[in-house]
Image (tube, rainbow, N blue to C red):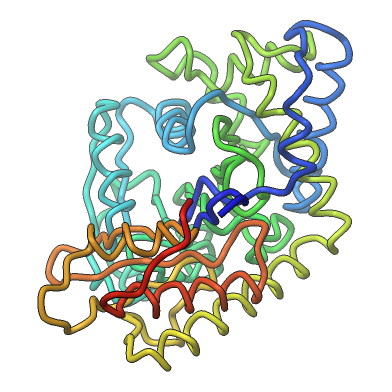
Length: 369
């Protein structure tokens, strides 16, 4: 098989040739041309969120988790109390990193097959007035469930609690409008629904809370206030930026805009998801989630009830046919996950389903990769 393998994961993703080609040039990290690319990317990101009037955006080197950790360290006071709404693996990661940042952390736990409940959150916050910040994973890709951002934001605003949103797997695909949804911070990354390459996160911070963040972070490299202040003053990154990642993201955003923006990307991902679920059901696979709570980002399937089934063997057989799946993230039952995002459409999803069908047939040869 001559083409690159198609990544059916929640990031890194399959990217376009245009995005790949953008990385073939070297850039000086302090050069005016590169600074202009950084400025353009920041402006475009704020436009996607409709956040230019209410928020700033601070890019940061590293994976999305780097930016989640940086946001907690920068926004939450040392005597603050973080409440994590927990219905999956990435929620638990947010709780762990907040604890490692030295903040008081508690969790409100929900079933991993169900979205978090804003009414239960409100009841909890009314009982425990020590909570200063709530952390919500918008799309919990451990199972693929979509959590109710608007309802949670309304509760936090009503009770005067800060809201930090991990929108890693939803930003630029699912609608998020800073004009109608109040949050103190929202975190996403380059290698997700914008279809760039991994290596850069970014945090939207509400202007009203920004000034209080000065000097709060215990980290030099991950201090978002310092990163913002330096960037505003000089147009430059404080430390060596991921130059190729930034220019690839600029090219990916241009294609995002050409496609029709968030609404068009959601429409394509929704068609991908529908094609995937229908094709997999025809093969006898059962999705883990109820369709009402399934985000069109990644779908968790129950493992097939076949003698001798082993995910590693199954993965290798699908990989040999040109597609990379994702292991399950659930602890109680055996599952695997298939992503719907990236520079792919229903045709590639149909091909992936066919590859899965062939992988389950003993004796079917695979094309050489």
